[in-house]
Amino acid sequence: MLESPCLRAWRVSHPSEVCVVTFANYRDSPSDPVQDVPGFGEAFLDGQRIDAIHVAGNGNDWFQYPEMPEALAAIRAAAGGRRLFTYGSSMGGYAAIRFAGALGAEGAIAISPQYSLDRRVVPSERRWRREAARLRFLPWPDPDPPGAVIFYDPCGPDGAHAGLWAAERPAVLVPLPHAGHPAGMFLLQAGLLGPAVLDILAGRFDRPALLRAARARRRQSGHYLAMLAGAQPPWRRRLAMRLLRAAMEAAPLMTLYPSRLAGMLYRAGEDTEAEHWHRHALALAPDDPALLFRLSLFLQRHGRLAEAGTLAAQASAWHPASATLARHATRLRRMQHALGPVRAALRGHNALMHRLTRLAWRRGWPNLGRVEQP
Picture (cartoon, rainbow, N blue to C red):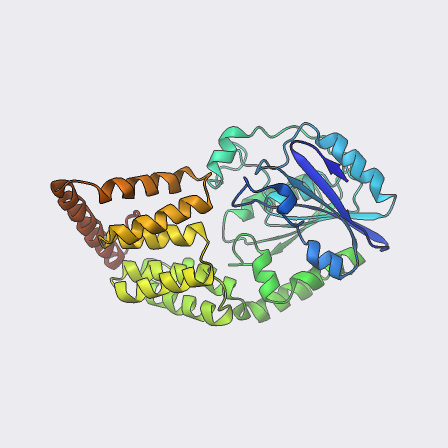
């Protein structure tokens, strides 16, 4: 439907009364061709036979492209006067709210949207620092902004963004404590995401009812349990581990939960079980660069440089755009070929880091305890 060096839009057409324009979220591998990326919510909207136009950028640029006004005008014309809603999550949630007025939308559905990456605007925002350093948020005209329904976790940095959006335009805020970022995973696991979207499109969304249902079903969500585990103070580390084990029971195919449990076990000195859960997470997603990286770090700390180097090389090959993974793989190659005294020094450094981590864990020094942890 629309393609430029920066932007791609395509349509999945259905004879519905409403048209939904979705915006893609942040991609872990922005170098992948945008043609290979499905639209946000594409399978769900297609299954519900709802007309949809999906928009994706060629990078993680928060849609700060000079051709956006022309693209939005073309999308608005293609909608053909149908009732129109925008929909997105995180980066896509920002676009769903920001461009709803220009599209003539009746409303916006946003999950954990950012308001800005600029710390002068949102002082608590420390994520996506590289993107914030290179992006300049353009002053988009926003005529007649429609209302937005914003789902977010008030316990994290997303709360500040939601408040700024609500101060600027009509908004229905739906706070979901410990839903994490983005909150869509919690809603999906609790069986609430699809019904909520359909209710908003039909004009029958009931915020109090959804909040009651979210509270009643929150322990069915592994994501909620994992986020709750991460919120525990250092002196409740055993409770945090129990919550992560419960999260794995609730969602056994999710790799995040065993990986986080492995990190906690490592800091507690339970290395054998930590390695088991690192390998369990990797078995669920053998090509995940983050999981390869974490197991590689774990093995490096234990002096198993050959296997650590192999995993680091695999991680870098799967995500060649990551400078962090490339540096880690290079460092391990050099360590494997180091002279005897250098290797001895490295073993001493690993042992020192090992003891420092244990001490920090036992004394309840969370920042120190996270130093270079797998």
